[in-house]
Length: 112
Image 1 (tube, rainbow, N blue to C red):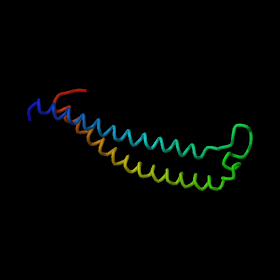
Image 2: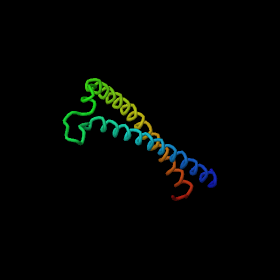
Image 3: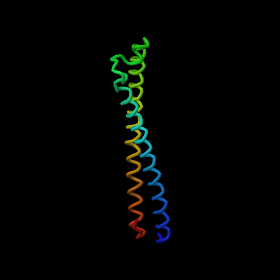
Image 4: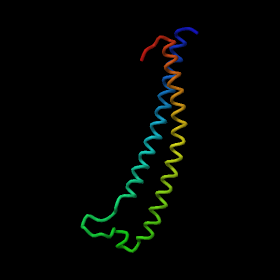
């Protein structure tokens, strides 16, 4: 293969590696956002005025709030599990594409 063709392949491999790394970063960001949401749902909701009852309990919706909160936490955890599986697959794809980029860069004599 000609050096120019190898350089072109290395550039394409670099673009593919960037795309795969961006997909992995997007999954990590999505997981982090869900983790923040879950953490917010587990924070105590007592008001700052020193009252020991949270607003939902004072309004008479404490049980409904608890059921919704627990269901929402289950949904978030299920979504985080789905993302973790996708993240692992994306990590393998990114690792492979990055390896291709490095190998083609070395073969073409290009250093980044």
